[in-house]
Image 1 (cartoon, rainbow, N blue to C red):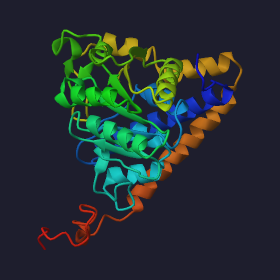
Image 2 (image 1 turned 30 degrees about the vertical axis):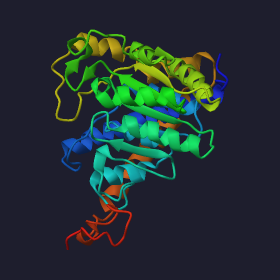
Image 3 (image 1 turned 135 degrees about the vertical axis):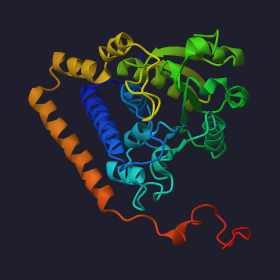
Image 4 (image 1 turned 90 degrees about the vertical axis):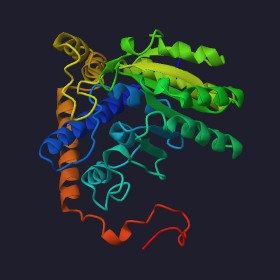
Length: 331
């Protein structure tokens, strides 16, 4: 039973949040095709229920850290579409001042502790953030997201071991979308039930339907309550699916059209809308209004990004070192 109740407002917020993620990503894909966004770009389309269900079960002061597929996590944590889109464009008004791009969204204010480009590199950082929160006597938790490919890294095992030993308030979340880049889980491991890897550390672990926002919320809520109570970490394998390739350069020819369509039939936006209508929480007019509002937010973010300036070349060494007079920077 969820200790964070699921109400009418929860459903409405889920839908609005997931729609913003979806429309932002769709626009990002268009802009990338127009070469207005450069570099690497990994879209989250299809996986929105994972983040939406996490946010409804956590507090604003709980931190999030993830890999390079980070746009939706940033938006869900309260970062504005403007600062996110500007970062995509490499503009100085972006959340990382235009220096991070798609893979490196960050906001200290919103406890979004970054998207990280090194596979699995964020896992020990998530454990470290949780250690700091516990050390400071806070009851906030860290939610550390990773892909199914990242659990092959040694850092994953080391982090789970230390987190369990020290009972750290961290929730490790494997967003298992079935493919590490273009390689299916079946081709990389005999352990198809990834959540069972947590049992080797005596860590509470479970598989969760990542296309069902209610299931994600309930599993996350249980894990959060354990962490706040000082009972330590949880490992969740949230089984989801991305409708696009690994990145914008991936045509995703390694999977069948039938598989893709099967998962599109489980689209979390469609199922959430159906639940809202069935429970009479809102009518079609509300959905039309939300759709128009979200479209406006995304369109305005593009305008903001295009009208913002690029960072000045003089800023190239700014924000690299905390020490202002670091002696090993060459002019």
